[in-house]
Image (tube, rainbow, N blue to C red):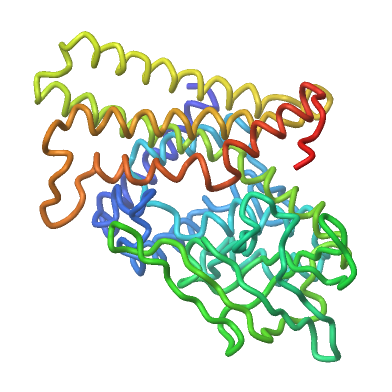
Length: 384
């Protein structure tokens, strides 16, 4: 047995033992549109992953991770998704905050924050988007002023996933009052449990709340809790976004494959799988999923010298549009039942509803296309 095959067997065995035992109740829960499910149990599961050494798998060893090569990371995310591993309550900590602190933070910051992420005891959220500054991150208005007792933060963030459960938030704030756009921003680490932080869940059409508004009213964080130099937060923020579209996207795609399997199963049950038009759409969805996988693998395998700098933007554009088409296909094969809600949304209804926001969050399609046009094709910037 090859080393990689042995590693895959190790992952499968560990997941099977845990997910068929104490944590059987969380299997398949907490995915997109379902972040409200079994929160306490998923927090306990996060700590179980930490005890097993599965958090920070690809982090460098000097940051407390395993330093696992890309192929092992791919195997873990694939097997996790296939086993029905629950939606990660701290994916923002492991995949965004932790790698950013490891890459740009001081040794003191690494010693303070990374262990809590690795052992699953500290939950993080992301303070980027604001009203009027969603896809245009450089337009943020949240401010932070350095005083004797630390940074004082004032402003509003929105669409903040999991903020109601988070212990910490990494916040982009303007720290130079006279600055504009990308200049004068700082990347701050702000504790959530304090009087100056007000989290207001945003109720969705599903009746649940996976994201929130967060208001900072003279919230305080230590003077040392700025990652990178004050005023140089844009570079750090872009580093975080680069981490966001890393190897975990392959696990996301295995989840997409499960959704496609559910669509096919319903199409067969309703007798629509033999319909030529529906059959063509299913084949197109399957082919699109293979394209997503190979695009992700090629992107992850690129070194810095061969990177165009827009691979993540292309990937985001591809998967968000693909997922929306899958959601529409899910409603088509469901027939009239798609319009009926019996107590709660069905899995295919949830796929459809969750997919609608994919072309907006994480950078809208319009923004992705502009970036690709300007940085890859050299087209002039939009003067508007």
